[in-house]
Amino acid sequence: MVLLTLNSQLEITLMIAGKQALASQQEAALTNYVQRLSKHTAGRQALHLRMSALRPRARRPERLQIAAFAFDPLINGYDGVLFRLKNDDMVVFCKDANKEAIDRALNNLRSLYASDPVIRDAGEDLKGFCRRFDLEKSYGTVVDFALEAQESASKIDAFRETAQARGGSSASADRVLDPASLGSIQAAISQADLTNMIRRQQVCAVVAGKPPQPVFTEVFTSMVALREILTPDIDIHGNRWLFQDLTTHLDRRVINFLSHKDDSSLSKAFSINLNVASLASQEFLNFDREMTSDARRTVVIELQLIDILADLDAFLFYRNFLSQRSYRFCLDGLTYQSLPLVNIERLNVDLVKIFWSLEFHESVMRKDREIIEAVEAIDPKRVILIHCDDERALETGKALGVSLFQGFLIDDLLKPGLAKRSA
Image (cartoon, rainbow, N blue to C red; front, side):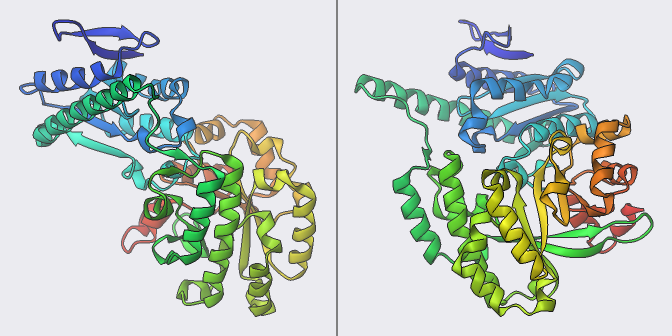
Protein backbone atom coordinates (compact mmCIF):
# COMPACT_ATOMS: atom_id res chain seq x y z
CA MET A 1 0.00 0.00 0.00
CA VAL A 2 1.51 3.32 -1.05
CA LEU A 3 0.69 6.76 0.28
CA LEU A 4 1.97 10.13 -0.94
CA THR A 5 3.46 12.78 1.33
CA LEU A 6 5.82 15.78 1.09
CA ASN A 7 9.44 16.33 2.07
CA SER A 8 10.77 19.66 3.26
CA GLN A 9 11.12 20.94 -0.34
CA LEU A 10 7.50 19.97 -1.09
CA GLU A 11 8.64 17.17 -3.39
CA ILE A 12 6.51 14.03 -3.57
CA THR A 13 8.05 10.97 -1.98
CA LEU A 14 6.68 7.52 -1.44
CA MET A 15 5.93 6.10 1.96
CA ILE A 16 4.95 2.60 2.95
CA ALA A 17 1.65 2.35 4.89
CA GLY A 18 2.23 2.06 8.59
CA LYS A 19 4.69 4.96 8.47
CA GLN A 20 1.88 7.36 7.66
CA ALA A 21 2.71 11.05 7.34
CA LEU A 22 0.90 13.76 9.22
CA ALA A 23 -2.56 14.20 7.74
CA SER A 24 -1.96 17.91 7.07
CA GLN A 25 0.90 16.89 4.79
CA GLN A 26 -1.51 14.71 2.84
CA GLU A 27 -3.66 17.72 1.86
CA ALA A 28 -0.54 19.65 0.83
CA ALA A 29 0.67 16.63 -1.16
CA LEU A 30 -2.73 16.35 -2.82
CA THR A 31 -2.61 19.99 -3.95
CA ASN A 32 0.96 19.62 -5.19
CA TYR A 33 0.14 16.40 -7.06
CA VAL A 34 -2.94 17.86 -8.75
CA GLN A 35 -1.00 20.93 -9.88
CA ARG A 36 1.66 18.68 -11.40
CA LEU A 37 -1.04 16.92 -13.44
CA SER A 38 -2.10 20.10 -15.25
CA LYS A 39 -0.51 18.90 -18.53
CA HIS A 40 -0.97 15.19 -17.87
CA THR A 41 -4.72 14.75 -17.47
CA ALA A 42 -5.27 12.30 -20.34
CA GLY A 43 -6.83 9.08 -19.07
CA ARG A 44 -6.65 10.13 -15.45
CA GLN A 45 -9.57 9.74 -13.04
CA ALA A 46 -10.04 10.59 -9.38
CA LEU A 47 -12.33 9.19 -6.70
CA HIS A 48 -13.31 11.17 -3.60
CA LEU A 49 -14.50 8.72 -0.93
CA ARG A 50 -16.51 10.34 1.88
CA MET A 51 -15.15 8.12 4.67
CA SER A 52 -15.87 10.99 7.10
CA ALA A 53 -19.58 10.24 6.76
CA LEU A 54 -19.23 6.72 8.16
CA ARG A 55 -19.83 5.80 11.79
CA PRO A 56 -16.96 6.72 14.14
CA ARG A 57 -16.00 3.10 14.83
CA ALA A 58 -15.78 2.52 11.08
CA ARG A 59 -13.21 5.31 10.91
CA ARG A 60 -10.75 3.86 13.41
CA PRO A 61 -7.20 4.10 12.01
CA GLU A 62 -6.77 0.35 11.65
CA ARG A 63 -10.07 0.03 9.77
CA LEU A 64 -9.28 2.92 7.44
CA GLN A 65 -5.93 1.31 6.72
CA ILE A 66 -7.69 -1.92 5.73
CA ALA A 67 -10.22 0.03 3.66
CA ALA A 68 -7.36 1.62 1.75
CA PHE A 69 -6.15 -1.83 0.71
CA ALA A 70 -9.30 -2.17 -1.42
CA PHE A 71 -7.68 0.23 -3.88
CA ASP A 72 -4.32 -1.55 -4.17
CA PRO A 73 -5.24 -2.99 -7.61
CA LEU A 74 -5.89 0.54 -8.93
CA ILE A 75 -2.73 1.92 -7.36
CA ASN A 76 -0.47 -0.92 -8.48
CA GLY A 77 -2.02 -1.59 -11.88
CA TYR A 78 -3.07 1.85 -13.10
CA ASP A 79 -0.35 4.28 -12.02
CA GLY A 80 -2.42 5.20 -8.99
CA VAL A 81 -1.92 7.09 -5.77
CA LEU A 82 -4.04 7.42 -2.63
CA PHE A 83 -4.34 10.31 -0.18
CA ARG A 84 -5.86 9.98 3.31
CA LEU A 85 -7.10 13.37 4.43
CA LYS A 86 -7.32 14.81 7.91
CA ASN A 87 -11.10 14.38 8.03
CA ASP A 88 -10.65 10.64 7.14
CA ASP A 89 -11.78 11.06 3.52
CA MET A 90 -9.73 9.30 0.85
CA VAL A 91 -8.84 10.49 -2.64
CA VAL A 92 -7.65 7.96 -5.21
CA PHE A 93 -6.09 8.81 -8.59
CA CYS A 94 -5.53 6.32 -11.40
CA LYS A 95 -4.66 6.36 -15.09
CA ASP A 96 -6.37 4.44 -17.92
CA ALA A 97 -8.38 2.32 -15.47
CA ASN A 98 -11.49 0.73 -16.98
CA LYS A 99 -14.91 0.89 -15.36
CA GLU A 100 -14.72 -2.76 -14.25
CA ALA A 101 -11.49 -2.20 -12.30
CA ILE A 102 -12.90 0.86 -10.53
CA ASP A 103 -16.23 -0.83 -9.77
CA ARG A 104 -14.38 -3.85 -8.39
CA ALA A 105 -12.44 -1.67 -5.95
CA LEU A 106 -15.61 0.14 -4.87
CA ASN A 107 -17.45 -3.16 -4.38
CA ASN A 108 -14.60 -4.40 -2.21
CA LEU A 109 -14.98 -1.28 -0.08
CA ARG A 110 -18.76 -1.73 0.03
CA SER A 111 -18.37 -5.28 1.34
CA LEU A 112 -16.25 -3.99 4.24
CA TYR A 113 -18.91 -1.48 5.29
CA ALA A 114 -22.09 -3.24 4.14
CA SER A 115 -23.84 -2.61 7.45
CA ASP A 116 -23.11 1.13 7.57
CA PRO A 117 -26.24 3.20 6.79
CA VAL A 118 -24.30 5.67 4.66
CA ILE A 119 -23.15 2.85 2.37
CA ARG A 120 -26.60 1.28 2.38
CA ASP A 121 -28.22 4.54 1.29
CA ALA A 122 -25.47 5.63 -1.09
CA GLY A 123 -27.25 4.62 -4.27
CA GLU A 124 -26.17 2.85 -7.41
CA ASP A 125 -22.41 2.87 -7.98
CA LEU A 126 -22.09 4.43 -4.50
CA LYS A 127 -22.93 7.80 -6.06
CA GLY A 128 -24.04 9.18 -2.72
CA PHE A 129 -20.71 8.22 -1.16
CA CYS A 130 -18.12 8.47 -3.94
CA ARG A 131 -17.54 11.43 -6.25
CA ARG A 132 -15.86 10.56 -9.56
CA PHE A 133 -13.81 13.01 -11.61
CA ASP A 134 -12.55 12.75 -15.16
CA LEU A 135 -9.53 15.05 -15.04
CA GLU A 136 -9.63 15.74 -18.79
CA LYS A 137 -13.15 17.16 -18.42
CA SER A 138 -13.10 18.60 -14.90
CA TYR A 139 -9.49 19.37 -14.00
CA GLY A 140 -10.44 22.78 -12.60
CA THR A 141 -12.97 21.20 -10.25
CA VAL A 142 -10.32 18.84 -8.89
CA VAL A 143 -7.91 21.74 -8.33
CA ASP A 144 -10.60 23.61 -6.39
CA PHE A 145 -11.35 20.50 -4.33
CA ALA A 146 -7.66 20.03 -3.43
CA LEU A 147 -7.30 23.66 -2.36
CA GLU A 148 -10.46 23.49 -0.26
CA ALA A 149 -9.22 20.29 1.41
CA GLN A 150 -5.91 21.94 2.26
CA GLU A 151 -7.67 25.02 3.68
CA SER A 152 -9.99 22.81 5.75
CA ALA A 153 -7.01 20.85 7.13
CA SER A 154 -5.31 24.09 8.13
CA LYS A 155 -8.42 25.17 10.05
CA ILE A 156 -8.54 21.83 11.85
CA ASP A 157 -4.86 22.15 12.77
CA ALA A 158 -5.45 25.67 14.08
CA PHE A 159 -8.43 24.53 16.12
CA ARG A 160 -6.47 21.69 17.69
CA GLU A 161 -3.53 23.95 18.51
CA THR A 162 -5.87 26.41 20.22
CA ALA A 163 -7.59 23.62 22.16
CA GLN A 164 -4.26 22.21 23.31
CA ALA A 165 -3.03 25.68 24.32
CA ARG A 166 -6.11 26.02 26.51
CA GLY A 167 -5.50 22.64 28.04
CA GLY A 168 -8.34 21.03 26.12
CA SER A 169 -8.41 18.12 23.73
CA SER A 170 -9.33 17.77 20.09
CA ALA A 171 -12.81 16.34 20.04
CA SER A 172 -14.64 14.78 17.15
CA ALA A 173 -17.03 17.04 15.27
CA ASP A 174 -19.86 14.63 16.11
CA ARG A 175 -21.06 13.90 19.62
CA VAL A 176 -21.68 10.25 20.37
CA LEU A 177 -25.26 9.45 21.35
CA ASP A 178 -25.69 9.66 25.14
CA PRO A 179 -28.74 9.41 27.46
CA ALA A 180 -29.27 13.18 27.49
CA SER A 181 -29.20 13.58 23.73
CA LEU A 182 -31.30 10.42 23.33
CA GLY A 183 -34.18 12.08 25.21
CA SER A 184 -34.05 15.22 23.07
CA ILE A 185 -33.93 13.19 19.85
CA GLN A 186 -36.88 11.07 20.92
CA ALA A 187 -38.84 14.24 21.68
CA ALA A 188 -37.95 15.60 18.22
CA ILE A 189 -39.04 12.34 16.56
CA SER A 190 -42.36 12.53 18.38
CA GLN A 191 -43.07 15.87 16.70
CA ALA A 192 -41.33 15.32 13.37
CA ASP A 193 -43.00 14.86 10.01
CA LEU A 194 -41.69 11.48 8.85
CA THR A 195 -42.75 12.02 5.25
CA ASN A 196 -39.26 13.10 4.13
CA MET A 197 -37.57 10.28 6.04
CA ILE A 198 -39.67 7.34 4.87
CA ARG A 199 -38.26 5.30 2.01
CA ARG A 200 -39.78 2.48 -0.04
CA GLN A 201 -38.06 -0.21 -2.07
CA GLN A 202 -39.64 -3.17 -3.80
CA VAL A 203 -38.71 -6.82 -3.45
CA CYS A 204 -39.20 -8.43 -6.85
CA ALA A 205 -39.27 -11.87 -8.41
CA VAL A 206 -36.88 -11.90 -11.37
CA VAL A 207 -37.05 -14.73 -13.90
CA ALA A 208 -34.89 -14.74 -17.03
CA GLY A 209 -36.65 -13.32 -20.04
CA LYS A 210 -39.37 -11.58 -18.04
CA PRO A 211 -39.57 -8.14 -16.40
CA PRO A 212 -39.29 -8.02 -12.58
CA GLN A 213 -42.54 -8.76 -10.77
CA PRO A 214 -43.05 -6.82 -7.50
CA VAL A 215 -43.83 -9.11 -4.56
CA PHE A 216 -43.94 -6.58 -1.72
CA THR A 217 -42.64 -3.11 -0.85
CA GLU A 218 -40.31 -2.55 2.08
CA VAL A 219 -41.17 0.62 4.04
CA PHE A 220 -38.34 1.93 6.20
CA THR A 221 -36.88 5.06 7.75
CA SER A 222 -33.70 6.44 6.20
CA MET A 223 -31.29 6.94 9.09
CA VAL A 224 -29.19 9.22 6.91
CA ALA A 225 -32.20 11.48 6.29
CA LEU A 226 -33.18 11.36 9.97
CA ARG A 227 -29.71 12.40 11.06
CA GLU A 228 -29.49 15.21 8.49
CA ILE A 229 -32.87 16.60 9.55
CA LEU A 230 -32.88 16.02 13.32
CA THR A 231 -29.37 15.21 14.57
CA PRO A 232 -26.69 16.60 12.23
CA ASP A 233 -24.13 16.94 15.06
CA ILE A 234 -24.77 13.62 16.84
CA ASP A 235 -23.55 10.18 15.80
CA ILE A 236 -26.71 8.20 16.50
CA HIS A 237 -24.89 4.90 15.86
CA GLY A 238 -22.11 5.61 18.33
CA ASN A 239 -23.74 3.71 21.21
CA ARG A 240 -25.26 0.46 20.03
CA TRP A 241 -27.76 -0.02 22.88
CA LEU A 242 -28.92 3.58 22.99
CA PHE A 243 -29.38 3.42 19.23
CA GLN A 244 -31.52 0.32 19.77
CA ASP A 245 -33.67 2.29 22.20
CA LEU A 246 -33.90 5.13 19.68
CA THR A 247 -35.09 2.82 16.90
CA THR A 248 -37.71 1.29 19.20
CA HIS A 249 -39.09 4.80 19.75
CA LEU A 250 -38.92 5.43 16.01
CA ASP A 251 -40.78 2.15 15.37
CA ARG A 252 -43.80 3.50 17.23
CA ARG A 253 -43.91 6.62 15.03
CA VAL A 254 -43.59 4.54 11.86
CA ILE A 255 -46.37 2.21 13.00
CA ASN A 256 -48.61 5.23 13.56
CA PHE A 257 -47.64 6.48 10.11
CA LEU A 258 -48.70 3.16 8.59
CA SER A 259 -51.93 3.11 10.57
CA HIS A 260 -53.11 6.25 8.79
CA LYS A 261 -52.76 4.41 5.45
CA ASP A 262 -52.37 7.68 3.53
CA ASP A 263 -49.88 5.94 1.24
CA SER A 264 -51.28 4.09 -1.76
CA SER A 265 -48.25 1.78 -1.77
CA LEU A 266 -49.49 0.32 1.51
CA SER A 267 -52.73 -0.90 -0.04
CA LYS A 268 -50.73 -3.86 -1.37
CA ALA A 269 -48.24 -6.21 0.27
CA PHE A 270 -45.53 -4.44 2.26
CA SER A 271 -42.86 -5.13 4.86
CA ILE A 272 -41.75 -3.11 7.85
CA ASN A 273 -38.52 -3.24 9.85
CA LEU A 274 -39.19 -3.47 13.58
CA ASN A 275 -37.47 -4.31 16.84
CA VAL A 276 -38.71 -7.35 18.75
CA ALA A 277 -39.69 -5.06 21.65
CA SER A 278 -41.89 -3.01 19.32
CA LEU A 279 -44.16 -6.00 18.74
CA ALA A 280 -45.43 -5.56 22.32
CA SER A 281 -46.05 -1.81 22.00
CA GLN A 282 -49.53 -0.32 22.26
CA GLU A 283 -48.98 1.25 18.85
CA PHE A 284 -48.50 -2.13 17.22
CA LEU A 285 -51.47 -3.63 19.04
CA ASN A 286 -53.62 -0.72 17.78
CA PHE A 287 -52.25 -1.25 14.28
CA ASP A 288 -53.13 -4.94 14.50
CA ARG A 289 -56.71 -4.23 15.62
CA GLU A 290 -57.28 -2.09 12.55
CA MET A 291 -56.08 -4.82 10.19
CA THR A 292 -58.42 -7.40 8.71
CA SER A 293 -57.30 -11.02 8.53
CA ASP A 294 -56.76 -10.71 4.78
CA ALA A 295 -54.73 -7.52 5.25
CA ARG A 296 -52.46 -9.15 7.83
CA ARG A 297 -51.49 -11.78 5.26
CA THR A 298 -49.94 -9.03 3.15
CA VAL A 299 -47.67 -7.74 5.94
CA VAL A 300 -44.10 -9.00 6.39
CA ILE A 301 -42.37 -8.14 9.67
CA GLU A 302 -38.59 -7.83 9.22
CA LEU A 303 -36.35 -8.38 12.25
CA GLN A 304 -32.59 -8.13 12.58
CA LEU A 305 -30.69 -11.23 13.66
CA ILE A 306 -28.79 -9.37 16.40
CA ASP A 307 -32.08 -8.11 17.87
CA ILE A 308 -33.60 -11.60 17.82
CA LEU A 309 -30.59 -13.13 19.55
CA ALA A 310 -30.66 -10.39 22.23
CA ASP A 311 -33.99 -11.81 23.47
CA LEU A 312 -34.70 -15.09 21.74
CA ASP A 313 -37.52 -16.07 24.10
CA ALA A 314 -39.39 -12.83 23.41
CA PHE A 315 -38.98 -13.31 19.66
CA LEU A 316 -40.29 -16.87 19.77
CA PHE A 317 -43.29 -15.76 21.85
CA TYR A 318 -44.29 -12.90 19.53
CA ARG A 319 -43.52 -14.87 16.40
CA ASN A 320 -45.90 -17.64 17.52
CA PHE A 321 -48.60 -15.15 18.48
CA LEU A 322 -48.41 -13.05 15.31
CA SER A 323 -47.97 -16.00 12.96
CA GLN A 324 -51.31 -17.25 14.25
CA ARG A 325 -52.73 -13.89 13.18
CA SER A 326 -51.40 -14.42 9.61
CA TYR A 327 -48.36 -12.11 9.67
CA ARG A 328 -45.22 -13.33 7.95
CA PHE A 329 -41.69 -12.94 9.33
CA CYS A 330 -38.43 -12.18 7.54
CA LEU A 331 -34.98 -12.57 9.08
CA ASP A 332 -32.87 -9.60 7.95
CA GLY A 333 -29.18 -8.82 8.20
CA LEU A 334 -27.48 -12.08 7.18
CA THR A 335 -24.26 -12.22 5.19
CA TYR A 336 -22.96 -15.20 3.26
CA GLN A 337 -20.42 -15.70 6.09
CA SER A 338 -23.03 -15.77 8.86
CA LEU A 339 -25.59 -17.77 6.87
CA PRO A 340 -24.17 -21.25 7.65
CA LEU A 341 -23.95 -20.37 11.38
CA VAL A 342 -27.64 -19.59 11.94
CA ASN A 343 -30.26 -22.21 12.74
CA ILE A 344 -32.98 -20.92 10.42
CA GLU A 345 -35.22 -23.91 11.14
CA ARG A 346 -35.27 -23.06 14.86
CA LEU A 347 -36.24 -19.46 14.14
CA ASN A 348 -39.03 -20.67 11.83
CA VAL A 349 -39.24 -17.53 9.70
CA ASP A 350 -40.96 -17.29 6.33
CA LEU A 351 -38.23 -15.37 4.48
CA VAL A 352 -34.50 -14.73 4.86
CA LYS A 353 -32.62 -11.70 3.51
CA ILE A 354 -28.95 -12.11 2.62
CA PHE A 355 -26.64 -9.23 1.67
CA TRP A 356 -25.29 -9.67 -1.85
CA SER A 357 -21.63 -8.83 -2.40
CA LEU A 358 -18.98 -9.53 -4.99
CA GLU A 359 -17.30 -11.95 -2.56
CA PHE A 360 -20.60 -13.79 -2.14
CA HIS A 361 -20.90 -14.04 -5.93
CA GLU A 362 -17.37 -15.36 -6.32
CA SER A 363 -17.92 -17.97 -3.59
CA VAL A 364 -21.07 -19.22 -5.30
CA MET A 365 -19.34 -19.31 -8.69
CA ARG A 366 -16.61 -21.43 -7.07
CA LYS A 367 -19.43 -23.72 -5.93
CA ASP A 368 -18.70 -23.27 -2.22
CA ARG A 369 -20.63 -26.23 -0.82
CA GLU A 370 -21.15 -24.69 2.63
CA ILE A 371 -23.01 -21.69 1.18
CA ILE A 372 -24.96 -23.68 -1.40
CA GLU A 373 -26.08 -26.23 1.18
CA ALA A 374 -27.07 -23.48 3.63
CA VAL A 375 -29.34 -21.90 0.98
CA GLU A 376 -30.76 -25.28 0.04
CA ALA A 377 -31.53 -25.99 3.70
CA ILE A 378 -33.59 -22.79 3.91
CA ASP A 379 -35.24 -23.34 0.49
CA PRO A 380 -34.10 -20.92 -2.24
CA LYS A 381 -37.72 -19.81 -2.76
CA ARG A 382 -37.65 -18.21 0.70
CA VAL A 383 -34.34 -16.36 0.19
CA ILE A 384 -34.10 -12.70 -0.86
CA LEU A 385 -30.79 -11.31 -2.11
CA ILE A 386 -30.59 -7.66 -1.02
CA HIS A 387 -28.33 -4.70 -1.82
CA CYS A 388 -28.17 -5.93 -5.40
CA ASP A 389 -26.49 -3.16 -7.37
CA ASP A 390 -24.67 -5.24 -9.96
CA GLU A 391 -26.02 -7.53 -12.68
CA ARG A 392 -23.85 -10.31 -11.25
CA ALA A 393 -26.37 -10.49 -8.40
CA LEU A 394 -28.81 -12.06 -10.87
CA GLU A 395 -26.15 -14.64 -11.79
CA THR A 396 -25.65 -15.43 -8.10
CA GLY A 397 -29.39 -15.93 -7.64
CA LYS A 398 -29.67 -18.12 -10.72
CA ALA A 399 -26.81 -20.35 -9.51
CA LEU A 400 -28.51 -20.75 -6.12
CA GLY A 401 -32.06 -21.11 -7.44
CA VAL A 402 -33.02 -17.78 -5.81
CA SER A 403 -35.53 -15.60 -7.65
CA LEU A 404 -36.27 -12.81 -5.13
CA PHE A 405 -34.10 -9.68 -5.26
CA GLN A 406 -33.96 -6.18 -3.80
CA GLY A 407 -31.62 -3.29 -4.51
CA PHE A 408 -30.77 -0.45 -6.84
CA LEU A 409 -30.28 -2.83 -9.77
CA ILE A 410 -33.87 -4.01 -9.36
CA ASP A 411 -35.10 -0.42 -9.04
CA ASP A 412 -33.34 0.24 -12.34
CA LEU A 413 -34.92 -2.79 -14.03
CA LEU A 414 -38.36 -1.60 -12.99
CA LYS A 415 -37.93 1.56 -15.02
CA PRO A 416 -39.61 1.52 -18.46
CA GLY A 417 -37.36 0.20 -21.19
CA LEU A 418 -34.76 -1.32 -18.86
CA ALA A 419 -36.45 -4.58 -17.87
CA LYS A 420 -34.88 -6.37 -20.82
CA ARG A 421 -31.59 -6.39 -18.89
CA SER A 422 -33.02 -9.08 -16.60
CA ALA A 423 -33.03 -11.58 -19.46
